[in-house]
Length: 184
Image (tube, rainbow, N blue to C red):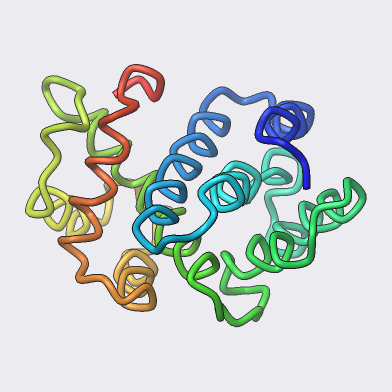
């Protein structure tokens, strides 16, 4: 399998947006944290998080994403379990999430983006102070990060077998450890 550095280069080849790269990095951080929690391979889980939206900038439609990304990963020799995890992170692919890695990717993807958005609108702009209560309040505001499915946020934690508030606290802690890099 490719190294983390090779995965980053592949991401950067297909993704020029700093915002999308930051999202990929946030999901990588979250996936590494959950891998450690589950006693799994943090390098592999991190790479899955880093590359899950590899194709999104060029192929944002549901007809293409994440299918184009899976093909790119196959062309670069990534194993089936990584490609399957990438496919499973989007409900419209109908790839059932079966492994902890797949469930963690689904649970972390949208919530990482939502948590960063919550941090950006805080007066101090810091993620470290984000609490589950404030996340739930923002979830009720339909105008806030309107593209994020609130149902997916809740379902992700449920599928992972983690209470939602605990999931929020866990990801906030993981992301806060890299706050400077993530700009929060």
